[in-house]
Each structure stands twice: as structure tokens, then as C-alpha cells.
Length: 514
Image (cartoon, rainbow, N blue to C red; front, side, top):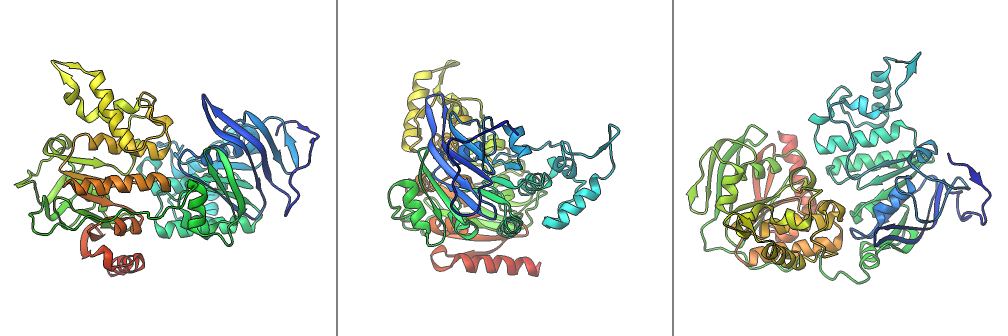
């Protein structure tokens, strides 16, 4: 840890002594002030949530706590002592670990090798063969049930998230910063993680829980700090707070209605998409559905149910091995590619915008226009002025902030990145829009903008297929929804006549029968 100096003023003395405290911290990135005079106290045995819209500074504050970002102003205190320098090495030696939103694993290594990477046991300069037993002991304590010999590259996103959590726990951290830790976890996995967090706090750890899932924040947290535009709006106990209280603090106004009004459900028109008994070698067994022009249809299922694989097959990303698909009046051939789908009028916003959607080091303009370069080309030359004008109008409609289309998209918040990916496909005015987890990693303000865009698509006559792990999202947007389990569409429901609790009970009962 860094050399310690005598404080000019003591740390906060209210409640148990702080494990880590940041006082008056500011952080600037170029011309953007990401944190402005922010103070926060992390005490043993408490879960402290950082919440705010994307770009509010919550992840930046978490990275300051973890030593990843050095503050431009302000102080860091560790166990009552002022620290003159703060970086990842000093943070780790002080017992601070971070589970970042973007996973930082070595894909070619096994689960156990990733978990203990850098803290392997050595004797006389040689690695000892205790890795497997150390991993078994850790996994028995946490209960994730991951195979320590499995290669990380072959794991799902949810299981890779678990590896990150295990890696932090393996370092015996006393302060653990979790940045959107449940974004890729199922309801059961999230509940298990919350049990692990409770056990850590019972052992005297402090957990920072950075999340946009406000229901989870209310469930798991003891304290909450709300940030808006880099400024701390409030820090207080969660007890007595409501979800509406948090939203109002985050936005500076009440959020009267999360979901826009649904347009009337189209009835007397032929489906633009009809799927019968579709099967793939990626987990879809027997899926059937229809979508009409101007209709929003949802897919509801647990993680691993086959809902994303169904969407990928429709878009040509996964091969079909059986069944029939009719789109826009014609039966699609068995051999169906992504370029075929785009040419026919389909669009697809995938589950992972980083891995399957965006080119992070390229500009917003380039990412949005990527699928439509022929629209801006004449005799082989790109009309940059036309491209810029169209992209700017599209992103203005989607309320991108800041409206800086020449900046790399990777530097924007998750909500703005998702808007850029959505804007790419809206440029083409597709007949069918497929949205897989359209608001994952997105704050409540950006969610509302995306929900409005989805409702506008349907109002313009577009057919929309929505997949979401947030069941209330599908119920709030869709005219109809299908339940998916074991690669099958097992039932159709009316979103206005069913609750999220009924959906979950039905899905679990179907899985038990299988």
C-alpha cells in the first residue's frame, strides 16, 4: 500500500469504521467531468449500491474505489489512513477487488486457471499441483458448480460472469466492487449471487453494487448513493426508499410511465412472419410463431431456453435443420444467410452489442451507417455529407447524448451504444425488427427512449420480435408473447392478462416436467 501520511482531517466517524472512504473526489476525461466532488463511505458488513443513469458516473466511482482510475482531486482513505497514491496494485494489497462490467478473462485458459491467475502457489520457482483442490474448496463455499477444468471460451456469458466473481473471492478481498454483476445471470443465478453477497457481508466485507436493476438494489443493498451527471445527489440507507424515489433522484423528475401506450393490436392482416416447427443444431427443437405488421411479439423464457437461438436462426446467424419459415409472402430456403435476411428486410439487434454488434474503436457515424453504405454511395464514392446528415438525424431522434457522431462508439455509455446499434437498423426501415435484450446494461432514462422507439416501429407498420430476461419488459411492450422452454414454444399468452409471477411459475413448471 502507498506511504501513509497524517490526515489533515479524520475520516467519517458515524457507524462502524470505514474500510474505504473517498472524499471530495473529482475525475475528468478530456472535457467531460465524470465525477464532481463526490464522497462515499464503505463500511464492513454493508452492501453499498451506486445507481444513476448511464453516464452518471456510477461505474467511474466504482473504478476509483478499486484503484483503476486515479482521481484528479480528492482523497482516498483505507481503514482510517489517508493514502497518497491509489492504483490497482495498492488497491489489491489493501483487499479491494473489482468485477468489471466487461469481462477480463483469458479465453484459452480453464476456469480454475483464470480464477487463480497471478496468485498460483509456487515452490522453488515451480507451480504446485494444488490448483484443482483450491478450486474445489472455493466452489464448495460459493456453490456455482462450475467445472474447474472447463475452458472459459466455451462457457456462456452467464458462466463467465461467475468466473469473474470467483476470481475476486479467491483473492480474499474485503471490499468487492461489482459493476453490473447480474446483467447476464438468470433469476436463480442472481438469487444465488445475492446469497453470496450476504455471506460476504456477514464475514465483515463491504460490497459495492453498481447496477441499473433497481428492484435488485432495493433487495440486496443497505446503503445507496445516487449520482446524476457526475454529482452525488444523495447517500442514505435503502430502508424506507422506493423504486420511484430512486428514479426521481436519478432523473431529477418523476418517471410517470415507463412503457408507452400500446398501439391497437393488428388483427385482420396476414402475418409477415410465420414459423412452423423450426429446429436448429444450437438448441431449438420445435418452435412456431407468427408476427403481423405493426405487431410487437415477445419471447419469454429462462436463460438457456432457446429463445436467442430462435432469433439467430431467423436472421441466418444459425443454420436451420428443420421446420419452415415464411417471410413477407414467401417461404424461405433452408440455406439462409445474414446477407439474405438483411436483403429481405430483416434487422437484428443481438444480445451482446460488444461481441456481435458494434465496432468499438470506430465512430458512431461509421457504426450506424455500416449496413447501408450503398445508400450513401454513388459510382463507388461515399457521400460523407449525406451520411453525416442522416446519421445525425437518426441519433438525435434516439436522444444520443452527447450528439458527437465522430467519436468512437466504445467511449459512450452502454445506453448510447445500444442506441447506436438500434439506429443502424432503423436507417434501413426493415419489415421485421428482432431485438434480443434491447435494454441490457441500460439505465431507466435510456430504457424509456428505446421503449418509445419500439412503439414507434410498430406504429409505422413494422413487425417487432422482442426477447428479454426482464419479463415485465416483454409484458409492458408486446401485444402477444410466446413462452419458450427447452427449445420449444410451449404456450402463447396475452401480456395484458398475465403477471410476471405467473410467467415465472409456468416456465419453471414446464422445465420440471421436461
